[in-house]
Length: 119
Image 1 (tube, rainbow, N blue to C red):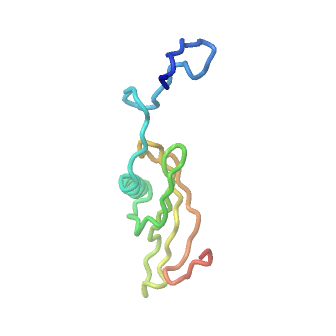
Image 2: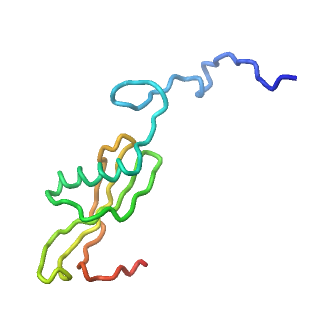
Image 3: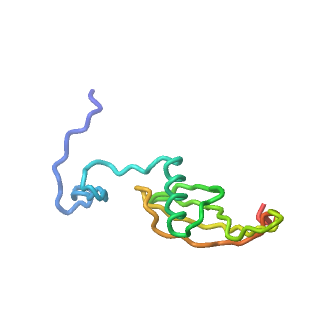
């Protein structure tokens, strides 16, 4: 007894049989694949640098989402002496599956010496 199913005929009323747009800007077909975590981290840092004019100190979090990636990026906003009084900010950065920045938002400002109360 064979476990293969016979091929079914396409049904014009069945959404599974509708042609799908790959969502890729180059128009290529095939499943859309999310970029790797290291590439997403670099992409978030590079694009935020371009927008803010300041290089990130670190990427403190990176999470996959249905549409791409979400990262928390730490940026030095105000350098002071001593360094422990410098002001940093956390930015939430949203990237699509291709690594393009879709949104960013400053979610927190703090001094370098401040201990994170969320932990």
